Length: 244
Length: 244
Image (cartoon, rainbow over the protein chains, first blue to last red):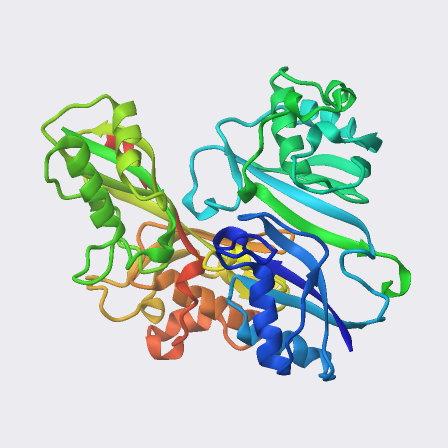
């Protein structure tokens, strides 16, 4: 049986999604929970990696097990074995052709910011900004990301992508009170792409950068800053019809 | 010099505001920071205790030190010595008659709830509810708290209050998306009062309790439940004119 799970996690204490020689990864936690629940060792394949400290609201993964358990028991059983920083929010049976990584059609990331004095309950969950930025300026710059572009400027080394061309379907800011949310939806993301973009958007708001110009450079040396991991959330992953 | 400080903290890792024989208190942390910054041992007096796991957005405290430091240095210096779960958001000089506990005229508490599937980044910060409650019902019940009443039903043993009569100036619910916020403002609060009230408000929404009837009982045995500490935030403390 191929199981498709949707999970939410607080990435603070993890070395990221992917198993690493040192540190506890979210993937390790889920694989251990699958082993305890099913009695079978299975590789848990995520839609993509998230870095250390990056959170997820709707990460998607798949794994194969011989045993067929009622889906309610998969959710409840895995949650019973998982640390509380990781929660399974949904479990489905998927077609054998479904692959959480390869079948992903689009992903949305959220970058969460808070303008104002330090608020310790938000530590490790937002990027704190000293002042409220100009939302119109930010949103206008964000809109320049939309479309099919070579995002080489916004790609860190080490991601192993074959091409740096991606299609951004949507990019916009929302504000509620002192919280600012940047949403970006694309058919795929390059290594550190959202964090590099956010750093440049904040510079652009201060008149120190322009997203359209940066896109044309196709060169990371023009966009060296990296926004902190703690503000980044993998929001959701969309697949094609029929779970394929 | 008497210093008045406003502070925000994540109460998760603390045994509460008040120094305890075992466990680390917020008060201990601040007293240690004061000692490191001023080189003087001083008692830090809070507006009131918060229990283990209860947070603060605007707790107020005072302390006396011989040394006069610029207020900016008090804020920055104390923050440099405090754990990141505690932040000084403001520092002022206060009149010698100002007492953070005795001079408090009113306080507002916030109780934060989230309706929906588990969201680990909100662990220890909200009360999770499986479903969105009826906000009209909740708000109508909350309104019954407003006025001068004997709140004995909503008082846990051990608080040492002389009277259980308090005046509630405001009590209301707000909703934004899946978050629900209960605000309650009074001239003072009894031990565990807000957490007992929240538990009964949630029962009243299900038709299992009525706030007006509970007030008339003046007996805690009719309201035994206690909402979890993690949803509770000391929002702010208001003092009279001239910092007295």
